[in-house]
Image (cartoon, rainbow, N blue to C red; front, side):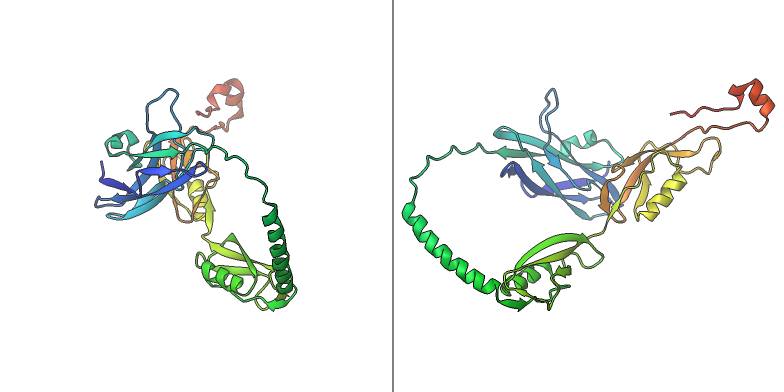
Length: 311
């Protein structure tokens, strides 16, 4: 068993509107790189098993010797009754079972507060409505004045998001942001609409497209020969490795009769992961249908000519 340790940003999470999160720091204390999985498990033994309410993006990672990885664990207990819900977090080697690390589990307590009782309605404040109406008219007049006064949109391309938003709002515009995959520096502006230098009404909305890391999609290689799977992973800019229990690693042996076939993928086919992420496959040798070139033998003894595919 490798030396894998974990610390949590907090052992308790008080949920707001049923949602919350924490950070788990996982350290590989061994002298070699280790494939590590962070898993969430029910904190109590119940029948049927209780839910963990947890989501862990990219739970399987390769951690260098002596290095530490930060995992963000999100919780969503929407629909759950008020109370406390224990969840176990276990960091374990991908080559071992999580039960082998049960003594290193960290229990996180999720607290779902009770809904507040509605307050009795207050008397309608007519005086404040009148005052508010007057103030609102004055504010609307000022806003309309600035809206109809054209101004040049600042050029904020390549600037960090926070700085770009401040520049846009300080110039009298409204800034909105959207994420777009890009090879530019993460968190910087790669495009803006309207463009920098364009003259529009003050108060108009300027949309900023913020660079996000380019993501790769796990290709569908189930049922393919391992050589074809390797090529698909290379084209998708992903790394391929084998899970424990894989029975073959290439079709170099008996390529015609028992090719090495992919029968499982982790993360699942179609999942979005970072480029160059490690994806595990499980392989097995499978029989292929072979037809005898002598038609007279196949006609007299068809069973001798076909090897059925074993699943």
